[in-house]
View 1 (cartoon, one colour):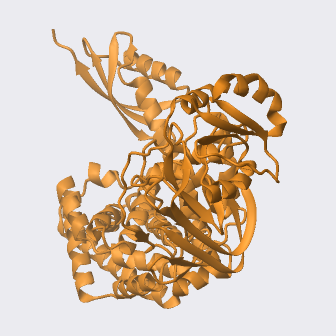
View 2 (cartoon, helix red, strand yellow):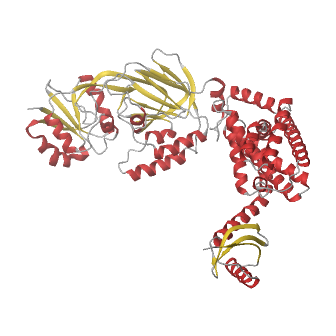
View 3 (tube, helix red, strand yellow):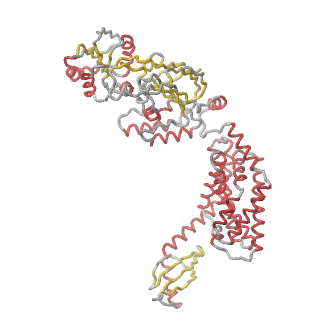
Length: 624
């Protein structure tokens, strides 16, 4: 028979009398309402069972530790953090059964903050709410809590300066927007997701320090938090992890923090794990069998220090991450070298244009692709985009010269080959580049993003992005030169429009990519981005009309292809012109058609399309 001392919340006395007392039965030695001045003398066999809130349990724990009570926790409605931290089942009946059936208690570690027990979590900074999650039981309530936390990220996201001193480690002076400290990996939503090797009796605490360098980094994490899968065990890329037995966190200003939901403030937080301090009946969900590594963890490489830390502390988090000084130096050195008009650049430009022109005359896609691989246009275009972004006049001038000389040589080569070649008929490869539309602008934007990203990231093969850039520039340059050689202004103008669209689109997209990678503050980039958007907007107007013409063409073909008119079938529909509609149509019939029959076919086509058309007819006769 047990000797149980029941300490309960006086506000729940009715439930205690109706449920707890009868259930404990003869094992109940004494029941006492909890008060601030509670004094209890226990025998060696006495077992304290509490039905208390988080706040009441915190008041009781110092006495329990001092007198080494054997203690068990029942799930009080306001025992939220204590229930999570010690693995207590939410089912009152199940907990009572465990209390009555269990014979032995166990020694467990206890996390203390400035001498006060921590049941579950210490949170520094409001912005970590997305990581720690909501304690609401209903999944929809937790979801809407996360939505609220997500929008709070943009309110006061500002880094604060902290000094961190772990056991046997040098003091770390850094900046962070917040931290989460837990004792073990089973007590908290965040720790369950990112801490695997962690148990209540490993003698360690875990501190996760959140130090994003921009709002965009926090934004991606916030979006990810909505869809994070169960069992995911990876910290965000801007979070540090410290595992140690003691940690001191200090700051020149008062640190506002939450300890198990209670808001407190102090200039210095001394955290330590007291091994085997508490003699208690472990909760049903508390893992007492697992063995964790005894080694400390000090993964703090992502934390800002020195110049980066000081920049973060000056103002709120920037919208986008600012690249480091080393990244600036390396990239700018490379871009300045790429903006110069070198002999090798001019030679490659001549060769690529010659090959592209010959491939266009031969209607050969593989040859044109080979010319794309040779094209050196990526380097000066990416340099121009950075110059536009940062308003660097010398970089803009040098890269513009390189692009201009390259295009001039390209035109001369294309025109020269056109004059020397007896071919003067356009083909599919040529005509594909004289009617640009918004889809071509999309290709240019994608190419610009690829080029800028590859230039900023060494691990990406720049030649791949170079091919993407060349796809959008070398063929239209060659076609435009062919149009000049033939004196065909429609071909020249169409290809030139595509060339200018692609150039403007790539410069704008690359500049925006560099902006989001942190290579320029927004206040400096506004003018260059605005100019790029205006140019792209102007060239997009004819592209829009070209796109609508393409949509109209596809609509006409879909309506007429395979259409039956008076025993004939329309095949191989080609739209020669949209305004007015001029069609090339193959009419398949059982016998030849006279002019009257052809007129009836034309009238039926006009009825289907709802407007007048001009027809170029090819007759096909079916032979049985």
